[in-house]
Length: 406
Image (cartoon, rainbow, N blue to C red):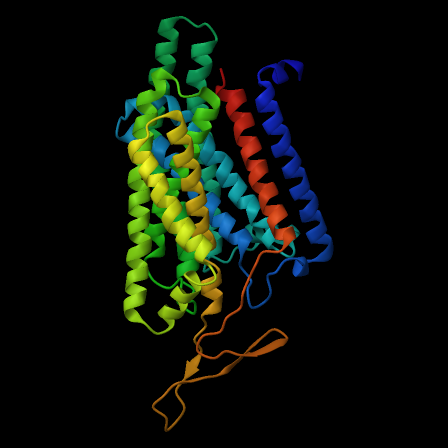
């Protein structure tokens, strides 16, 4: 333990201590939620998915982006990114495990999660998402091992010929694995998008737009996490400058694609009118901080920094702001979906559809054309989510330091 502590600088120990404390508080809050039930959250039967699922989508995307970066190193032979490939694989592994764990607070009875293994319903995309996520975690772990072998060979004082042999062997394994890993990296966020999109009763989710936008968001958040982890572990070293420049270009292009996909969808919805205007009124009304600030201004600033400021400060700010923007985009998935419910029937002899009552559980509500149900996460939801994110960050940096630190 003493030798382990010596590998961390005082500032690193302080930050790690804060992250660990937040993670412990988050776990304690989850214990409180388990004892009291989901009533301590602001989710209700009218609003069953909220901050936890938004965070799950964010984490899945970040995991997907990590292995996409790592796989492209081998598929496209982008050799300047080779030093960052092991870290990219590690971010993929840690974030996919964190994403699967993030589902647990959303469940009222998480101890029954074993049923998805013992009694899978293969007509449900949730089961296929679970299969894809587990497979992706295994592939990520193999990629981490491949990178770790090279690191160990270089830092154990082995002869140069032996190091070269291990490097060549690992690179060959990576080339063989990448054509399998890259489709799964795309698939984990595509299936997650389909889970939302096949809910045809939710006009905010319905359609084929979600999958490409999820992939674009994954490229943004995955690239940002790889850059931040590399900067924290290695610093802005001269021998890594070309790698950081390439990653910043990749980040900037990904942000531009994401912004295009978001706002072309908003334009089409504005053009359609009807309930689509109700969705936009929520986004630019109550949710203006996450829409105007998060999805637009913050992402635009991140794009400008990634395009023009190729320094340690620029890379740090661009990556951090990109993560904030993508998280805001994930949060915006929720409220419009549950606040615009169009339940209309055509009565005999009438040419105009009319709204009808809908019974949900023990609550009866009149849904008129545009019903509004404001949602703000409860303190318990905030604390648990912050604790989860802190725990993931703590785990990522600890493993990065132990496996690839110098």
